[in-house]
Image 1: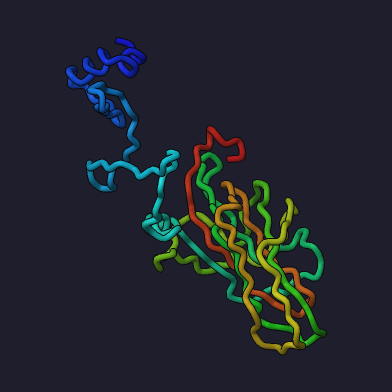
Image 2 (image 1 turned 180 degrees about the vertical axis):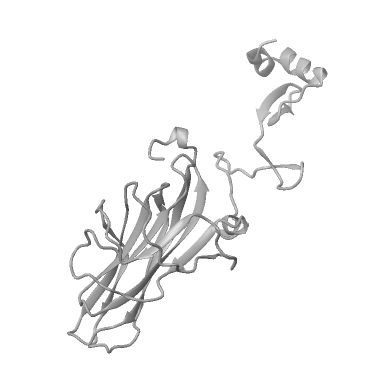
Length: 252
C-alpha cells in the first residue's frame, strides 16, 4: 500500500489501524460523518523520560513556546562556559587599533578538532581615569586573528561559570603584537562629562552572544580606544567552548 493511499483513502486508513503499525506523529481522527482522516500531531518527548506530549499550536499552526530555563543555563551546566580578564591595566589607544592588543585569547585546540570559542560577552574596567579635559569617551574594540603562533602566556586565571578551574587549551596574553585582521567596535561607548581623577571609573560591556566565534589556532583580541591615553583598562571576555563539524565548515 502506498503512502498516498494510506493517507488519502478510508481503506488505507482502516488498513493502517488494523496493521498495528504506528508512525510517530501520525494520528487518526474520526469525523462527525463517521469517516476517518489522518492528521499529523506535533509532539515532543519530556527530557529524561519516554513520555510524549503534544505541542500547543494557535489556530494558524504556530507553536507556543515557553522558556523554562535561563538562556545560558544548560550550556553553563555542561561546564563549557569560561571567563577571564586582565589583572593589570593596559593604556587605552587614542587611534584605531592595528597591531597592538590589550588582551589576547588564543584558541590552542588542534586545527582539525573543530573546537571553537563562542564568545558571549566582552568587558573592560577603567581602572585609572585621567584628569585631562572634559567629555572623554571610551569603547571596546575586538577582532579575530587568522591562524597564528601561540603567544607568551600572561597566566591569567580562567574560571568556569560555576566556579571551577579551567583545564582547556586557551592561552591568554596581554599587550601582544598581532596582525590586524579587521577591528570593529563592540558595545556602548562610556562618556565622561567631568574632569575625573586618578581613580577607578566605569565599566564597558558588549553583549556579543555568539556573534564572534574563534576557530582553533586563532585569537580573540580585545582593546579599548579612549579619548585620553592616560586612561587604563583591564579587559576580559566570557565564552563557551563548542565543537563544530570541521568537515562542513571550511573556516575550521
